[in-house]
Length: 360
Image (cartoon, rainbow, N blue to C red; front, side, top):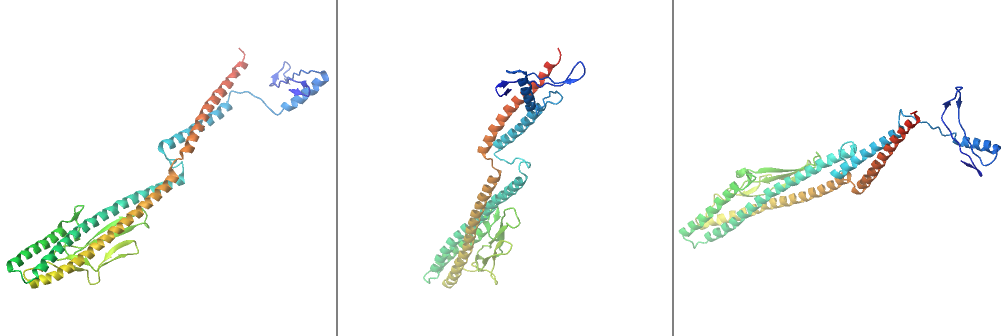
């Protein structure tokens, strides 16, 4: 060390046994000036060094232990980062984020339920559209029946002509009954299960997997035949438990019985014309109900899709990996592993130097 303008070299050694079994400590000082300066400088240097105790041992290589611990931590961090980068998720086990994984599991269940609800609503919408298409054909046939009845109502037709008009008219009625019987969706009859005058209900279930998020649209399909054409007078209502349903009129819905009509003469034709016009109105009411429920299903699908988007965005914010931060950590842990290996090797090498202290 340097003291003022003088130099002093001090060796602080370890205890040694002398020939008289007393412990000695060697201090060697070299000074530029006289013996008095030597004594004063060496004392100052000894005081400055007295705070550091130096020992060498091989029982526990603490430097290597510290380096090994840091290296293990770096390896653990690297494995976590690689798992995040490969999976795209920052939560790959419950230990990564116990609260977060609970939210993720709940949101994934909600999204799965919402997606299936969209499918359910789409299937209900498909059944409604099949029924609408069938009623559209019934309306077209009834319009033809109006033409025939108007023609037969004229007194200028002879019996043969009235019979020809009635034959076509009866064919129309038979086809209406056939439409009610053969119109199917998913291998099931649409109109009242094929039973004229008896309605059938198809429940479209939608949910977000919770009890409070349940919505049911109970679609009503009345029977269709020549003796039961159209359905009018009911109303759509929603109950307190989230069920949308069709409620029939207090005295029953209106439908038209065309099976008892004919065009065999002008009087019967005029009566049939009145009934046909009534049937067209009832079919229009029923078709309007199907159309309104089709629109409702479309709105429900749009709402469900919006909820799916929002739930997915929230799930992504919780679960997705920030690749910028992850790649930064990747570089950090790779460097720490390299330096840790180097430090561990150096610590082990220093411990081997103890061998040089042993006699050869």
